[in-house]
Length: 419
Image 1 (cartoon, helix red, strand yellow):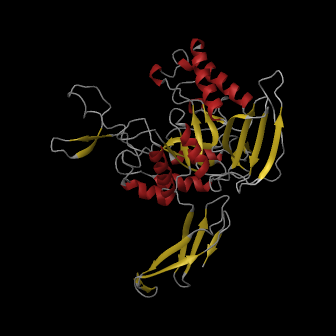
Image 2 (cartoon, rainbow, N blue to C red):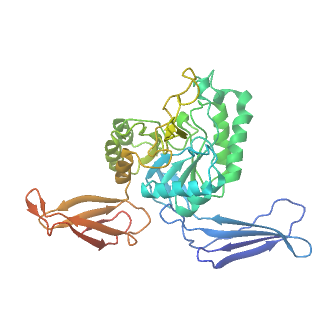
Image 3 (cartoon, rainbow, N blue to C red):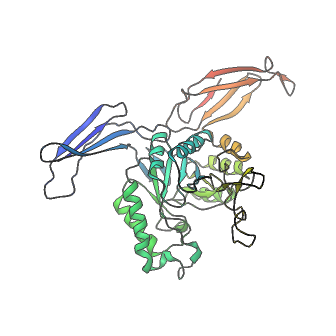
């Protein structure tokens, strides 16, 4: 016998049922939950599901617990909608990387990445270019991070031409399908996953049409995206890499049928983000079509190494082996943060532009500040504005010098405020 119990976020039992297993390995439980608390990145409401397996004597022999959420994802009138609203992704691509352990991450390091996301106002992540540690999705469910879950498929070294790419070679179709299906079956119950990605830079063709069709047939709750499909059949989202802001505007003005979400943009190599403001000024002009993007990328993939004096530094290609050892030099050091997650200079600009609360203008004569909430679901009543008044700005007195104060304010989602 199988028992299912569902508890609300405040731990109230809202559904319980048992069913006998009779000549089948599959049992369906169906129940309409009236007006559940919705899961969003701003309001990550989670319910707790218990599944118990009983033996013939009525003893529980196995029990599973899972956090689940209720939310609706759809594409309608050319917009990507979450619970009926066209959200904006202030996203980042993230490789699983630890400067001491490589790809073997601890739970502590993953929690720290979530904290850094929140500090930087990052609301979404693309799991470039493979499904991540299962615990990562649980953290994204809990803390409210939107996830593009990407299949472990990349073969751009073979080229993109239809006669060369593995994406159009039927002898590789089962390999493509295996990696897509196992991603879906492992991760399908996570509410934070709001998009599937078929892979990265692997050309296009019959194999990606097959994986797209399989996902669409088996999951009615999520759209599917793939950058190499461009505006073709097998991507519900137009998700280009590194388009110029002028191109974004041209696309949006055509009133296209597909929303545009940049799967990669703003290559943050070095100490600058470059024309980041231009991107977001353009996005804010067409928020129902241009719905944000995912910065390349989150963290420098360097490793801790010590020099001859015993001083630690972050090593990369060229720091290992002799001088003739092949490497990509520092090309993997293109993150917002260093390997230890300390911030690079451009992180501060990203934090500001990604902020969900915008200062739109200041009226000096009336001492009024206009704020705007870019949240879609959450009020600002948990936030506190801390401000400083300087004595003289361009000859205009604002009050006592170095005066700090706080202001409580409540903005409804997408509301402006004047004080």
